[in-house]
Picture (spheres, rainbow, N blue to C red):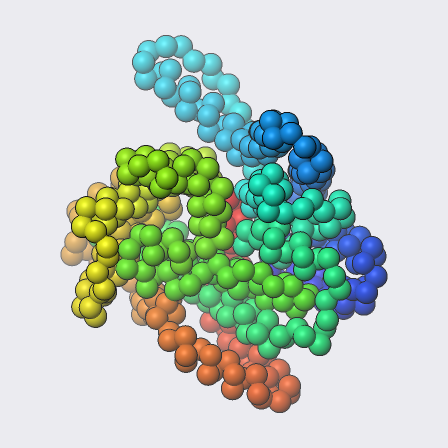
Length: 471
């Protein structure tokens, strides 16, 4: 079920008032929200609700067992079993076909016979997100940072529909306490929620879909048919598309959760303002960045085992982060580029000492370099194969001067708008929001109605699935 659709609007019109009507009856509210979340998930493919249920039951049992165990070795064994259970589910549905095909290709390259067995496994939507949330919960229980909760509360936490299919990755410590007590409708910042939802719709429908429909998909599908200028603008276009698409989804998810009375963590903070790759990952998909840092990088040793090990840990973390996004060598290359870049940055800081303060020109130079490195890595993220990525890179240098009909005013404006959104001063946003919040309810409703009409008018026909649905 997609957010920017009539189907979801009808679904939410039913869920929102019912949720508030049942809020004071905890058991009834939990049962209703669990059912609503499973209906939301089943709308894509009802069979995979059993996978979500299995993940919920398995991780709840593991967390309770870890919480009851008194011996450290027993707790460690139970944690290992829980991690293996989660990675086993994720590995089968997401990586089994990739591993089989990679093994067959490797055998054929060295002249050894390989079977023609093709493993086709449908990827359940959102499996990466709810698996990471389940892992964070179990690991936090093991570390003593979280107490195991009762089954209904954990089941709602893992399946809560606003974050279920594409995040943000909400930790138990962030959401479980909110599920413990009834929410107060009078304290909901509905104005902020509507603002987030409307901005999310604009970014997704107007900017991301516009770039996807009129430029990016065509160029990456057949780069040899397009000029170098179209390829270059398509690379910039994809950088803006994925930002607008994912931030749009996140804004809607946070806004929907807020209307239900729950606060989700921020997931984006002007990532294309970044002056380094480390700064970029502090701003881009922030909930994933923190997850990789706290549960993978730190577990590998972080920066506690010497400089060389720190560089290796950075590279390993981002390689695995790349694989988390998809079972393809393009994602491995993308993760490797970011991991190598982070390691080089860390080496430079270790070599040169403490970072010096940036001047104005220096900050802009650093932003430009960082942005173009990120854009270069996005080529591999977007391309369907390594061969396709090579075709994009080759065409970037071999077809200058050819006609570029896809580089239209609308495309350029969409790219400019997406980039400009990263540089809107926080103070300006705060003042604008405060003034909007002080308007009478009728005036706010009129503004929102006009905004929705503009989104519907400016956006292309139909709504494409969110990019991160496939991760």
